[in-house]
Length: 200
Image (cartoon, rainbow, N blue to C red):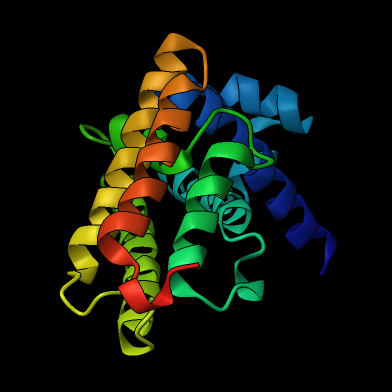
């Protein structure tokens, strides 16, 4: 990787942290210049606009977050247990980018102003839904998961429960809602999703 590419990656990483904590509108060019040690021209030589930088910074933050959420899942063979691990990771493992979930932050932040950023957030959500739906579909095929389970509905239920609990936890400044969501989702997966013949 050349020096220009390294600089570009460093700017994206710093912007990811800044925008995830302060939002697209709250993260100023001055803040980014201070974080990177670069002047305005040194930053925008690498990007066509603040919108492009924000979208790439979101992708960077999201990839860091999804890596934390998927930690240890490849070592698990049962698909219900994979879902439970993903839920546990969401509650207990924090991504390296400060500021909470990039998807939740960006969904709110980009709602009325940055269509490019909103498009990147929408694609990230679709990817997360798709990954979960695939785990669920594989679980139905391997008979770990009941055949009547709707993969799309279950994926959305898990995502909505976790993201909603995260919002409450951030407002209340404690993890109680996240722990409640984890406990409820784990119990739901055991009672309604796991095939009766695949109980532990």
